[in-house]
Image 1 (cartoon, rainbow, N blue to C red):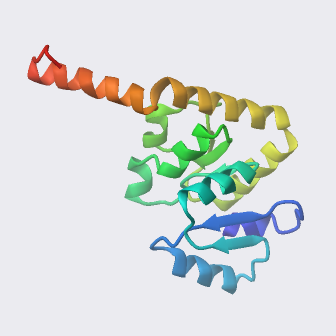
Image 2 (cartoon, rainbow, N blue to C red):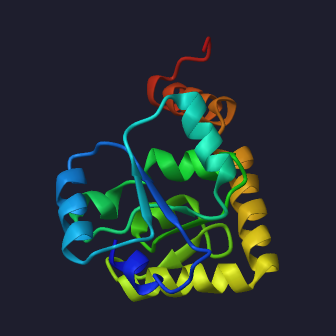
Image 3 (cartoon, rainbow, N blue to C red):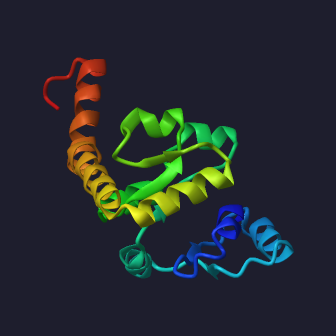
Length: 167
């Protein structure tokens, strides 16, 4: 929300926040308190509508908080967006780095609004970089995170830990 406030004068940048997560009440209060005008808040949507929303986006946002959870997860929304070949801006965390490298996601400082706003402007101005990140993130997803790839990896782990060759 604070990054959106920093970009309020960029009339062609509109944020769309989707969902009814546990922080929504606090986020809505903050948006009201700082009189934000460039965020469209939406309730949760169906999977099909979510895909449409992601498809319509130029840039998708990942996770940015300064919490223990932020440090240890790659949220579903990151997977969903890279799977749809969208560039993702997200906090630079150990969890994100466990799978993604520079150039596959656009990493920002954790919980720093200016870093997020600067990343959005950089991608807005550099279409090649935006497209490269989308392509590289998608390629990483296809290479490492599809159900077939994860299933194969899980099967190998089970084989190694159980010494079962019939699997």
